[in-house]
Length: 281
Image (cartoon, rainbow, N blue to C red; front, side):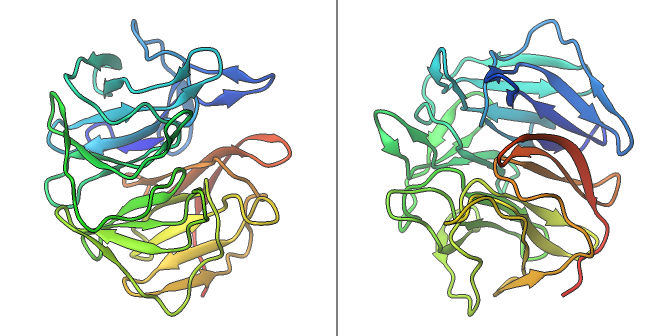
């Protein structure tokens, strides 16, 4: 799920439905109503893909995911929200086929970037890639965060960096890193959220903070809310919160002026929609 700037709508694609059904549906949210689209061509059904807005293309870029019948995905698709159409990008190289890659907007040039993901065989991935509009480029930054999948990775409009936290890895990931478009830098916050993977994160324009929610903790799904202040993490205490869940989707709805969260799982599948109105420290 990602926010499309030209249309002013959130776009959602795919997911895992009831009965282990892999979905290929495209939906938009205008702040009030979800609308299912019927594009003439769509990406194959999948769950756990990554999608972000590419400011240079002025379109959404989708990469990766998993389908239990066809395996791990490494295809790239571009969505034109103004036309309501998907187009596959035929690239000469790409990040490895992976589920739960972190796909995010680069803070330096607005391009779509990919970090990490998981496949079997292959394990957890560590590379950082960037889409130049026609092909993927392996950026080879050094140092780099440890290999992981299902991390929170989102652009912080206040600090002008992308912020990475958590994720699933061979040894657990509780480190915080920032990406400025050229370099990864490990941060040393005094406070850290608990180890978790498969949570959601996005920038909240109301508070000016990057917000995270949910994820899979060491003892089960979480429903805690945390904020990155630019140098430290602080837990927030909203008056009401969604039920504990993992694999949820969250996006910064610039037209609405806040954060929107949809779906996820945690003992059951959810199709509820939430907006973050305020979060008390």
